[in-house]
Image 1 (tube, protein in one colour):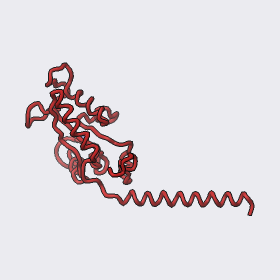
Image 2 (tube, protein in one colour):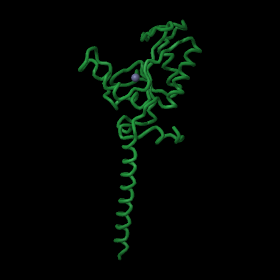
Image 3 (tube, helix red, strand yellow):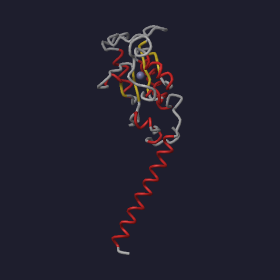
Image 4 (spheres, helix red, strand yellow):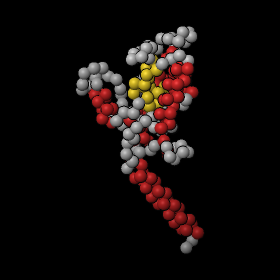
Length: 183
Ligand SMILES: [Zn+2]
């Protein structure tokens, strides 16, 4: 055989092996179940957020965390097939909440109360409590829905670990991109 033929054969084998590897990985990803809880790192960050906010005199309420596909379907229906106004543009499997990677918050001026007033300055330091919470959240690694370019979602905080919804839908998970494989 000519060296040229051998090289072409080797290349062909490499392409086939790589293809099989990718196919297996795809099969493994796609068979993964949907998460059923908030991701442990998001849970920790949520608790830290509550504590840090408390330290500067802001009490917050976590109004939403993990959301199942059924729950997502129900809120997607709001303002479309059921009564009320539209609250989300994400169908089941299209929200970071469905992967346990997002939380929503509100300010709690008094126990049992929740407000979404972004001007409110309950700790009287001349700054909006809302934006103070957002700043803490960002320092903990959250990205804020108020920074989204299309649909602004001010109570929303998420950690995407560099994963797009498309990748999450395909079964990719934070443990595929972070060092600690137990997570
Ligand atoms: Zn949200």
